[in-house]
Image (cartoon, one colour):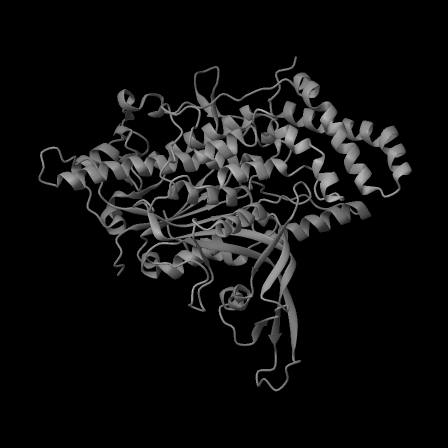
Length: 578
């Protein structure tokens, strides 16, 4: 039986490019709700159960964030969550903080790299990087991402982890290692020959971090089975490690520049046992030197929904919690795949080449271990938060909108185009998380005490329980795992408007629209300049480069970009031009 009575929570976040703003909104509301609940519980603890002001409607069970994993934009959000938990000055976005002051999620994902000198798009289209490196490293200037990281990856006033975050909290960021790690598999069971084997290469990987505290000392742990690094935020080099890992998982291939990562050889030595479950017969082929360096691109290339590794870590840490269902896994995915069928590939060489690339991509993304781990999860232990936007039709009914995220067009890059798109997705994330916590993230009434390790009072049940079908007093009852303090009585939808105002029931945000005419006026010249510089960097002959660039590439390249942007924005109803 689990001696630790805290309900364990694993949060895993998929890649989303600029739609990471949605994930950020989800996380912001989640942490705010946990904080409000913790304050209410602490007030009760201070008063004592026999005090006349003790609030019996406050559930007193404990929920603890234990593992956070993320890929690409989800990896960025994972790091931001760690920093928000560790920073005393972090402030939630709400009616009292409408500009997102001291809110790392809002600053990073909504404001992005906007400042008084230039906005995010202008930075992405700048050409200084092409001159700086003397080669083309990415289609977009990654300065904007550096600006965001420099502003975000800081701790203003460190604090111990709050009660709703584990002291052994793990942050896991996926990466795609272009160099690859080589492992020798020895097929000679009698070990008579060192040459009786073959070398396999693994390009998927992850960074795993914990924070220094009274249980964990900084650096690589002495335990040879431990595959993580303990960060000390007082050390600039450790903050740099975290920054490099975060930018590494977010290095969208070709669009943003790759990252060169250096890790300790000790990490490589320990990796086979963690990857394969044992080391006998499998040994890493380690390059000379104390460290191992590689070029890294977006972790989502190989593992875009990293719940498998998160579940593995959670299960290793708390096997009893797994056996007794005292845990839950939340996947935040802005772009869950909904395809039910796949078209057959054509017979032309171009079609075959395209189909082959798609097949390789899909096969790389087919994470068998992660799928099997997810299938092992029992009922009401795995949950998904995905974008859901509803609009009111002519009959006054709220129905699912055609499109959910403003950042979705252009393969998820549309959010970079305008702050209003990111603002919308952030607000939608908060709205969807509010609904999720109140009406989905719950245990059945008959298993409340069994799973949450605390018997709920009748007052707490009366306040927070909901029913299926909704509002049916005779329906099956469920009790939220994380109760929302903004609720007066959940069963019939009574919320505390007096205290929380607009935050009591967050409104569905209207879909923003921009003027493509105004967009062209502001960015046309910059886009053409970027295209011209890119073409010059890719063609060595300076005269040929100038001629082709002047006569063809700038004009044709801009036309292609313009049409792609316009068509995608128009199709998603994001333009207000008549």
